[in-house]
Amino acid sequence: MAKLLGKLHEEKVFKDPVHRYIHVRDELIWRLIGTREFQRLRRIRQLGTTYLTFHGAEHSRFSHSLGVYEITRRIIDIFQEKKTWDPEKRLLVLSAALLHDVGHGPFSHSFEKVFGVDHEEFSRDIILGDTEVHRVLLQMGEDFPVQVAEVIAKTHRDKLIVSLISSQIDADRMDYLLRDAYFTGVSYGNFDIERILRVMRPTEEGVVIKSSGMHAVEDYIMSRYQMYWQVYFHPVTRSAEVILSKILHRAKELYETGYTFKRELSHFKTLFDGNVSLHDYISLDEGVIHYYFQGWMEEEDSILSDLCHRFIDRKLFKYTEMVSFTDGHLLSSYFTEAGINPKYYLVVDSSSDLPYDFYRPGEKEERLPINLLKPNGDIRELSRESDVVEAISGKRRTDHKLYYPLDLIEAIEDITLKSKIKEILNR
Image 1 (cartoon, rainbow, N blue to C red):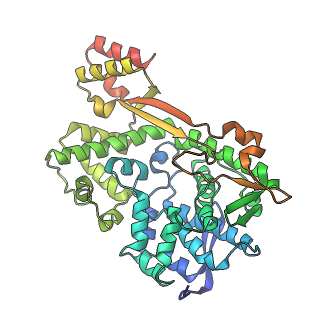
Image 2: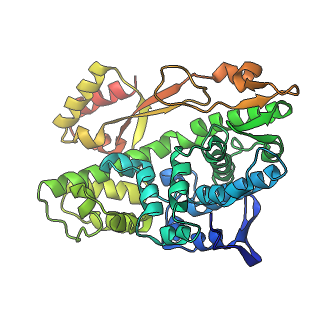
Image 3: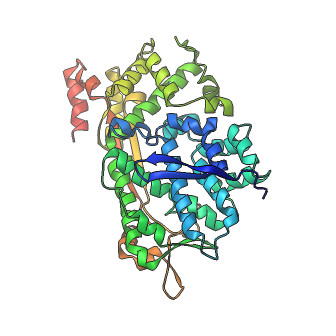
C-alpha cells in the first residue's frame, strides 16, 4: 500500500466534551475531516428529533464521527504491542471509523423510510464516487477507497478490523452512548469506557474482552438497554418523528397529484421522483429541511400546513397505549366523520430493540457475539458467563403506541362524536 500521505508536522486536536481531546496525527485523517462531504455532517443532528424532548440533544453526526475515530485510535494504540494486530491496517480502520456515518441524511431514519433511500448505500457512493472524500482516499492507493467501503459494509475479509467498527461492542456504540447521554443530560448511558478499552484484545476472529473486564461490559450492555427505552424510544420524540414522517408523506403525495407548491421544490424533486442523485443527496441537510417546512406552513393544503406548524412550533401529538383492532377501526371512522384525516392524524408507531444477542443458526442477520478471553486462553461467549446478560439475551422488547392530535379532538363540535372518540382513547 503506497503511503503518499504521512504524518502531520504537528498534531491537531479537537476539544471534545466526551473524550476531552480528539487527536489527529495523520495527514489522511486531517484531509478527510476537511472534505465537503464530511463537513456536511455538522448540519445533521446525531439524534434527529430528540432535541424536541431533551433540549440539549443538538450534537451532530460530525462530533459523533470524530468520537468514533478517537475511540478507534485509542484501541489501536493499545493493540500496537499485540502480535495479532497488523499495524499496516491502522489508517484503513481509522478512515472507516471516521467515515462510517458519512452517508446519513437529515432526520435520517424517518427520511429513509419515506423515500426508500439507504444511508449505507450513500456512504458507499460518497467513498467510491466523484467526491472530495474519494479523491483524498485515492492518495493511499487505488484499492484503498474500496477497502474502506468494505470495512463499513462489514464485507471486508479481516474480521478484526470490521469488529472495531461494527459489532455489539464497537467504537460506534461506545461513542454514541456516552455522547448521547452527555447531551441529553441523562445518566443511563454512562459506563467505564477506560476499563473496557484496557481489556480489549485483538484476535483473527475479532475483538475479545479479557474475562476480568466482564462487569464493565455488563454495565455497557445495560447502559445501552436503558438509553433505548429512556431516550431513543421516548414517546415524545416518537411523536415528533411521526409528524415529521407525515409531513414528508403529505408533500410527496401532493407532488404526485400535481399540486402547485408556493415554493420551488428544487431540493425535493428527484427524491419525490425516486431518482435522487449523489449530488442532490449531499446538498440536503437539516437546515434545508427546516427551510421547506417553514415555507410549507403557508401552503394552501391545510394538512401540510398544520403538520409543519406542529413540527416547527412543537405542538406534538398526544399518545396512548395501543387500542384493539376493532377500536382502531372505530376511531378511524369517527375521525373521518369529524373531518380529521386518520391517515395523517391517527398513527400507530412501534419501537423495538434487542439489547444483546449472539448468532443463532437459521437467522438472516449474523450478530457478532461479545466473547470473553479466559485466563487459560479459552474463548467464552458473554451470556454463557454473565447471568445479567443471559437474562436479557435474545429477548426483543417491543412497544406500540397510538398517536393523535388532542387539540383537534377537543375542537369537534359534535359532543356525542367527541365523547365516543375520547372514551376509546381513555380506556
